[in-house]
Length: 294
Image 1 (tube, helix red, strand yellow):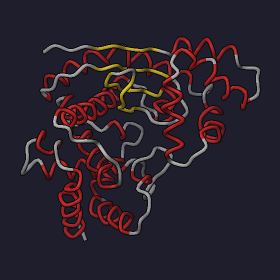
Image 2: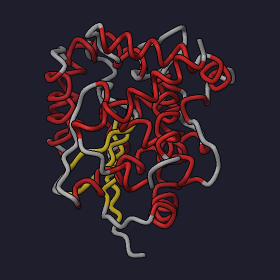
Image 3: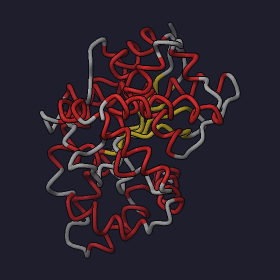
């Protein structure tokens, strides 16, 4: 199966830039991040700033409080993640195309950003792309070879999902039902691509999976309650949040939903659900899980 892979590696430029800005104030470093380090890839800061703007967040404040004060301490982990991404990107992408039976070009972008995510599927330079934020990978503790493999497979799952929907002119949307469906789909793909059960979110917490399994019904009920109350579901997904003391439990819950759907549909059928039907597929499963565990 043919594949076109491009890797844009900005990390060497980051290291040079970071060394040169050690003695300037934090706010000046943040300005310099955009104007100097990112200057060769102007679309990258634009994408990240727009992401924060869409959430009504001040990107400079987030960078000042959550990201830049920790970069020195995370350099070693970022370097390890960078090395493992370069080693694994092409191999895992080839395996993914075979195991999921899809064929798409891809650009992998490795960068140090302002906290928008460890992995992010988005068009970049007119190509389907996966952006890997080394600052978030290091923050989550996902720098090892095994965990990078899981992260890669998860993001490639998103890419395949977007690819199939694009082929059938079905847009990706947003909202809590979409997020649970989309992240659950990618989580199922992570294991399908690697050929073994894989939860990269659990790499720093050996009780994460057993906790999620024991709290499955509670998580389903809490998700429904959160949505029905009109609250954000970020505590289920974001690395800066938690629910019940555990981070990123929405990936487990979404995976459980997709696994249930796989009893009745093929993977590509699930990938092509109409946006306005996703709630009708997902909500009854969560209600059933909640009832069965109460």
